[in-house]
Structure formats: structure tokens, C-alpha cells
Amino acid sequence: MNGIETLGPGLLERLPAAVQRPAYDRASLAAGMAHLGVGAFHRCHQAEYTDDLLSLEFDRWGIIGINIRPPALADTLGRQDGLYTRLIRENDHVEARVIGSIVKVVDSQESPEPALTVLASPDIELVTMTVTEKGYCHIPSTGALDLGHPDIVHDLASPQAPRSLPGILARALDLRRSTHGRPLTLLSCDNIPTNGVILENVVRGFAEQRGDGLADWIAANAAFPSAMVDRIAPAVTRQDMDSVEKRYGYRDGAVAVGEPFRQWVIEKKFAGRMPRWDLAGVTFVDDVTPFEHLKMRVLNGAQTTLATLGVLAGLEHTFDAIADPLLSVFVRRMLLEETLPTLTPVPGMEPHAYLEQSLSRLRNTAIRHRNHQIATDGSQKIVQRLLNPIRDRLSGSASIGLLSVPVAGWMAYLIQASARFGKRWRVSDPYAGKVAAIADATGRDPHALTSAILAIDTIFDPGLAADGTFREAVTSALDELLSDDPMAAVRRSLEQDGVARLKRSKQSAL
Ligand code: CS2
Image 1 (cartoon, rainbow, N blue to C red):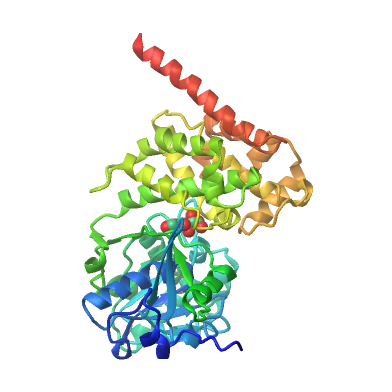
Image 2 (image 1 turned 135 degrees about the vertical axis):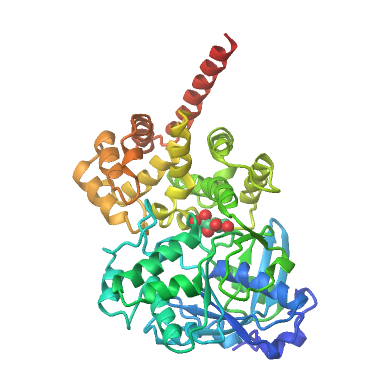
């Protein structure tokens, strides 16, 4: 030991002046909500909003943080009594604050019991979650519960020992029904479209399979609002933790790093009391859909595009990809010309300004978001980020030449991780095995590759997969992305699209 103290309640009064601390009496904070999936995003977003709220209006809204998947929380946050340093970084600027809203952490990776005890408690009125897109066990193209998912098959056979999110939530609701009967709001904070609807689909869908009246009880006693969440908060690195020690003189094993921008829009649909997060800048609305489309198609669409094309171009982070002159022109034109026209008006937000703001957020060099991190689980992301806007464009016979390139980018990213293509990098995606098997069987023929991948109907709905314009655009982009000059696909799509626009403007001038 080098005598450096670890963050904990005893250090709160002695923090350096540059580090903000909770402005409320943390010792008297009671838990009223639980959160599943205590990762970097939760610590930078919901826990910070809650910390803001508690300093404005103190109420029993402490958070119990639960992980049902690795990493374990006990040795980091647990050891620090839930306290951690949240760093906001923008280029050379750093702002540090210790967040106090997480009052307890629970590890439930080995068995569901610790999680169920919290979730079934009458003191818990709200359960929020960030479990990543694939945690919902839904079919991306339809939003329905995937009854063939191995964890769902397991949980339906042993509903009292669940391991999936739908199985755990259904079991917790069942325990609530049979003990105190108090209602519960379940709030998804993941980037899946209509996340409240999907959460309700998978939880009620699971309960319906059991057929013992639980689904009806859930319909009457639980609410599943949708929400749009936003703050870029990449996986935390050892350097981030070391930087706290170096700058502020204490050790923190649970540091979280985010950008200055944050946003949270929540559908007004609750089963009981809700935290007054509106006091801390949250917007409660009747319909989240326009906000969600704007965020997922523009900000997340740009991230996925820069991530997959960035890896193919040999670039490491988002800020490296957007500093590339070709990718920077491409992503702006794709969003401006093809994505923005698919959006419905968003109250209080101007799409062009939002687009420029999003691109400037991605240029923040202090947010070291790795392209491989964003490309992870791409199969769960492309529907809402790329395929839905493509479908909207096609229904109006509008061009999709640019949006098709990152779709082919996702394919090329997985294809090149296959043995047949030399395992160029390691990938993590539930569909990686399937795409690798296709690549191994098909080889380099772009038509055969595209046809086989578009036939995966849990990602590509059959109507879209059959569309000739889409197939052609994806096939030619994929052909080039797999070549020695992958960026030829990007250059050509910009040129072709330019020619098409020129033709259209000449026609309209006649
Ligand atoms: C990212 C998101 O990893 C990813 O898929 O695109 O986590 C993104 O940073 C957040 O949605 C920003 O709010």
C-alpha cells in the first residue's frame, strides 16, 4: 500500500475542493428504486440525475444497483459504499463530482435470489435498467419475445430459478403479487426502439407462456414507460482510474467518464410514484417516439456508421473516425440527405441543429470511445439506427445509397472476423457465429453473401430483404468494403448519390 486512501463515506468531508460532493444527507437516504445493469452509462446518467434531484428535493429515492451479469460490484462500488467519481470530459476540460445516489449494490450473477429479494420488496416502487440491447431476449426485427432463446427456454422450464431479464422480472412480479401486491413501474433505459413496449412484450410474453393469471396481474399492476436516454459514456479504462488518483489524490475503483451533454425524455405512464426528475432536467412527455427516432437515427446512427467503417479504415476511436475527411463528409451527408427527412417534428428540437451538435459531440477527443466497443452487438443496433430509416425512405421511393453503406459495413465487420476471411479482429455479437458460417460457406461472392445475410429474418424483415434497390446497394458496397480499398465504397456512394441528385434537380428544373 502506498498510503493512498480509497473513496468512501469517511473521505466525503475531506475531498479536494475541485471535486463536488453530494449536497444532501446521504446517511438518511432510503432506497425506493432498483437499477439492473450498473455500468458506465448508469453511473453517468440516471444516477447523476438522481443525485441532482436529491440535492433539490430530498425524498426516499436512493438506488439499489444490481448486476445480474459480470462485472461483480462488491469489490468496487460495494467497497466504496456506492460512492464513485463521475468525470465529465471535453477535450482538455475535466469536471469531477462524487455521486451519492446509489445506496447499496447487489451481485446476483450466480443466483437470481439476491436480485429477486430487492425487486420484490414493497419499498421498491420503480425498477430501471440498462442491460444492453440483447438483454431483452427479443427478436430485433419484430420486438417479440424470442421463445427460442436458450435463456428463455431455460427460464420457462424453471421459472423459479430464472437467469434472463424477462424471467427475473416476471418472477419478481409474481412474488409481489403473492406477497404485498404493490404496483411497480419498470423503466427501460436501453437504446431499443419503443423500449417500454419491448420490455412489456418480453415480460408479459413470458408470463403468458406460464398461463397462471400472472400476465393479467401484470397488465393491471405494472407500467412500462418508454424513454429516450442520452450521454456518451464509454467503457472505463485503467487510465481513467489512475487519472483520479493523480489529480485528486484518492483511489476510486468505480470511476465513470462521460461527455457534458445529457438528455432524458420519459413517457408519462407510471404505476405509482415517480422521482421528480423533471426538477433535474428530465422531460416527461406523452409520446417519446419522435425523440427516440431523432436520437437513435442521428446520434446512434452516426456512431454505428463511424464505428464499423472506422474499423474497416483502420481507425481506433469515434473521434479518429470523424477526423477522417472522407468519413466526416460521408456521415454528415448521409444524415442530412437520407436520415433527417425520415424524422417527424420533435417538440422543442431543431433537427439540423441537433445533427450539428451530435457531430461536434463525436469530435470530443477526451471521450475515448473505441470503434470496436460501438460495433459490439451491431445486429441488435442496426434495425433502429439504419434499417428503420431505410424502410421509411423506400416507402417514399427516396434514395438509400448512403444509408446502405454502413449496413454493408456491419456485414463486412462480421464477415472479416470469420476463419475464411482470416479472423481480422475479434467480435462480440449474437449473430457473429451465423454470419461467420455464411462467410465460411460462401467465400468472397458479394451476391451470395448479401443474399444469405439478408435472409436472416430476425434482423431483416422479409419485405426489406426483398427490395431490389436495397439489395443492390448493399451488395455493391459490400463488394468494395471487402476489397483492399474498403473506402472506395464510401467514395463511390457519395459520387453516385451526387449524380442522382444532379439528375433529379435537372428534371425538376425542366
Ligand atoms: C453507443 C451508445 O455503444 C453504443 O452502441 O452508440 O452507447 C451511445 O454512446 C449512447 O446511446 C449515447 O447516449
